[in-house]
Length: 350
Image 1 (cartoon, rainbow, N blue to C red):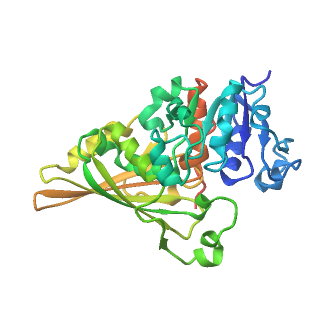
Image 2 (tube, rainbow, N blue to C red):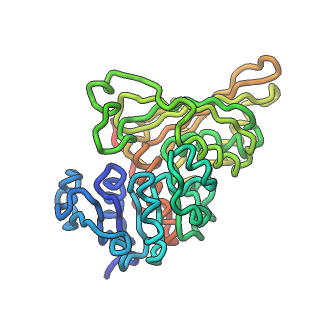
Image 3 (cartoon, helix red, strand yellow):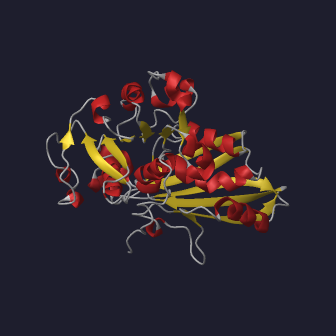
């Protein structure tokens, strides 16, 4: 008996595509029928992704979007920013549902897109057709959606760290965040910033206060109940291939105690299948790398000048919960499936 749903991946030769393909090949209800790419055309998927050697007979095909979507219930997009938006109108016309991993449909404001992505959006009329795919915030909307914009890796991490405070009315004014990320977030094409000799023993900040995920995070926190946040975000390039650790500093009234913060975190995540609060150890990347799980936690400081500092932490795998795994989670939701399907495996240890 065949599987219930058919899926295609467009842009399947990169790291995000690799993770989506891997998850789809082991999915019990969704069959991957086509992988489109402008690279490795005619070659087996293992030419780009050696871990898939012998796992499938599929080859990379160079196909127009509508042809790639033919006969599919859902199309998963792993193309670069600014490229994706040029192809989405044809995919909308195909009738397939869409899950997009690029940043092209995350922002509701086309002016913000132009500011942070450096281009005029080619189809702003479609922006409001996409639901922002953070299940921990918008699960019910995602389940009803035809088109989902999967969140960015930094955006997911930082939002998960701060959602409890946003929901509790404790997030306003400047919020300072530093987040360290692995090199795979820069994509499969080698660059000076991801070259191993210059990265493996190095830490450096980049795009301080200007990273393109900034308006996405502000938009998400506003929806969660914090419309007056001024995000001060500094990303840091870290000497690891996978993972993000975000540290966020929030000032709250001095009479806010740790029990209230704990209750807000528990209320936000007690029933979330992929967000956990570690007990007896810090939030750490190695515990979630290779998995769709995220970890969150917090520390409350002493009172000073009428305020306390709450430090919120979150860690996840940028390619999975911060990328392709979350896209599969969104796909499961829009198809009416258990969102955990093909995603519950833990990462490797050590």
